[in-house]
Length: 461
Image 1 (spheres, rainbow, N blue to C red):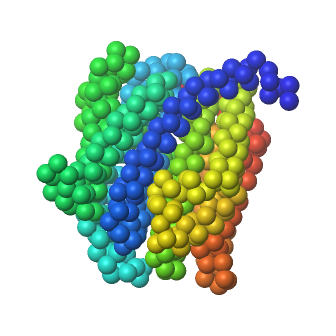
Image 2 (cartoon, one colour; image 1 turned 60 degrees about the vertical axis):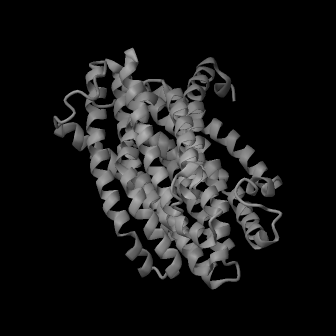
Image 3 (cartoon, rainbow, N blue to C red; image 1 turned 45 degrees about the horizontal axis):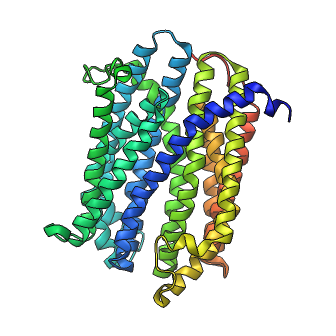
């Protein structure tokens, strides 16, 4: 306990909090950007709400995987800054090649989104829901490249200690998306009434606006402009490109394993019924919103560990890990309390809980949120474990842990309890809790064993 209250620990907690707070705020605001789509589309009807949920299972999943892929630039850039030798050149190399990867990944997401409607038919989704989802995906696909590129620039400003920029850019994105949805879904102020297509078009406009905002801020800031990120952007750096793929592919795979589990849960819920899927959609929005704080802390931990790793400071690496775990534990406890004590208030942000027509959705969603409260700590710890290991550029074995934890344990439990017991939707959510818990235990075990496994050896220059 004395070590946890020592001056170095207090300093690390302060630095970690200073970096994590704006990142967590930006994550929460980003979820609010996505939630706006759900809030507006929910007014169109249950079929449209189900359609955007299934669309997110394809577009959102692939987008998160792409952001995980380019997330490799965070430990690379942080380690370069920690070493201090040729830091500007090394950071520039990483960011430029990450933008290349963003463009390639965005094109892949577009192709996958265009094939989304046939994928949904194969999984046996209702015909009307599938048709609506196809409309949404063929438009929102065009936002993929700018969205992933903006994620790269967000990592750049955060690694330089300017994470507050990410928060304000996301505030701007929230405004753009909200206005775009209001204008284009319902045809306000003389704009065309486009329904789901309007929600998709608003998302594309928001992605472009976010990317432009980052570029303008970087180009007008004296400190960031000296990195000369956008000059000679066409020149390939094969070595750094391969570094990003080597570190980033397992990160993307971890994202695929986790997000794929949650997306698959949506398809399981769709097979159980539209009421279960609608309740799952609303409850998952709240659970995902709560996750953004520990996720922001884990992003900060990746950068803090990367900086200490670049300096070959093993004591600093350990302090960064403890600081992250302390912060995650505290915030997870707050969200557990909220989900258990004020579930109806939380749900009221998405649906009218007093409308008798929504009674079934509210009842089911409250039950799902009780399970979500139970896995808040597990969710935070698995994110923190992955983030800490990522700071050491250790991503391959964590991917195997995620694959094992989320699928044989998580999905297997969800399928058995959801379709072979009377638990139905609650059983699916228990499966999610099991997957997160098993993965979190394995991730933190590897972090605890980092010295014995020689994971914290000096970063390569």
